[in-house]
Image (tube, rainbow, N blue to C red; front, side):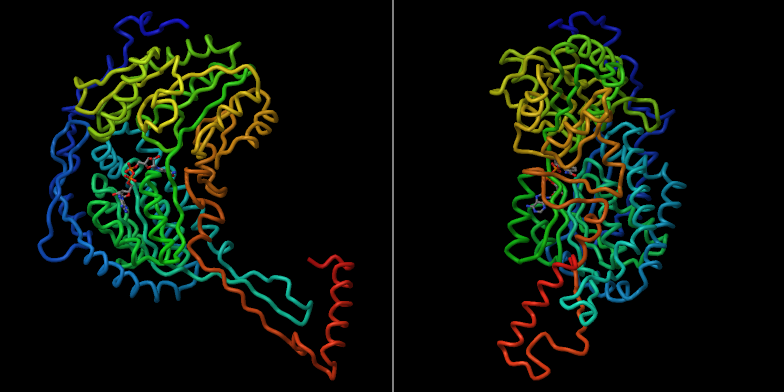
Length: 545
Ligand code: NAD
């Protein structure tokens, strides 16, 4: 394999076109975009009583201090549940259409005021503005979908009764009550409010614990939803260290919605199980992209860049394993590497950069460790491969590795950074087997000009979503269809019917008319059994379901 790093002139290295992160977006700095008055206003939305302890967050783009946020205690979490529970009763009594109207108003407000939240997302996560916009897009899609479709999902449905005509059956959907909702830092708008929207429209209240690093974005979204008509107490936000207040969020919940790492997800699931409350878990991934011999290599290379480096790879559905057919591997890799090297890294609070920073020193260290260990053990760096402290404290170049072998951590462990390893295959079976050789099962991507073949291969992949000729956005953006993980990537699904019905209890109301389901009309037990045996045979012959 050609060492493309060695071939690349220095001027083509990523970041060479990057702006100065200290004076981003035409002179707008993080401090001017997120002034202390805004922080104070948003922080007032945190449920935390008395004189709470404060925790400082840092803007990843520059390393400067961003916000000082009150920390909720487990007792505050209890108060949040009490307030939410009180507000939930009258909210649940409102017609679905009235609740849905709040989501539709929120949709319009979000699109109108998107610049405010794009600044916040960039300030808290360090991602490029285009990647922050993906969150606005995803939330708007979910708000419109559940705003328009909630009524159909939630309305009473007639079901076949035990005895045709005589048993009238209706399946209804009741809200669970108060949802405990724990969200991570990587997509702070989408993952705090994206799942809250279906929960709320289904008649629930929500107690949300966002990651402290990205709490301002969640608080902003809550403020906007209240402006759209949501009763203020219905969505409570508590902020604090996960191991300290996370268990309390699970402890009082009627249902838990968790997005985060598989390790924490297991703990959350066990606590929920001990209380016999349900939980949906959206966890990690080690997602594969398959480039078949007949793929359009330019489109695949362009798609691979988005697949691997959106939000600097800190995306649960991003691609970390690239499986390429032997016959096109060198050609594909050359085109992919060329596009990767041309990416502009930058920290401006404006559109223009192709990739931003990692969120924290923890992510930077994890990424650096995976790459350095692999290189030491014999892997080749095709592009990238180093931190960029000249751009900001946590920047890391988009990185392509070749020659990765199973004993290297980067082969099977989720990196959650801008790193992808390239592997080669000869047959379709080999590719499917390699893609499925992971305990995760979140997302995958297949590239081929033969769309029918792409869908056939997709059906053999053990992942909750598969994108044919797209990286992840086709499936994730199709909010009418379920999204989630198989295996260690999670339990349950967001989006579609499952994404809203998980926040409800099914209730069957059966009304019996004229005859009971027991001996009557003078029949003794034996005669009753004989009549019903005959009846059952007739119903099957008449093709009753
Ligand atoms: P994490 O599990 O460390 O934290 C997620 C959330 O859980 C945070 O709010 C954290 O404070 C909280 N938490 C931590 N310990 C807790 C505990 N003991 N009890 C309850 N809550 C606790 O994950 P992270 O590192 O912040 O996020 C990155 C991970 O999330 C990656 O593995 C990524 O793949 C995954 N993720 C999955 C999806 C998906 O939809 N499948 C989406 C985004 C991120």
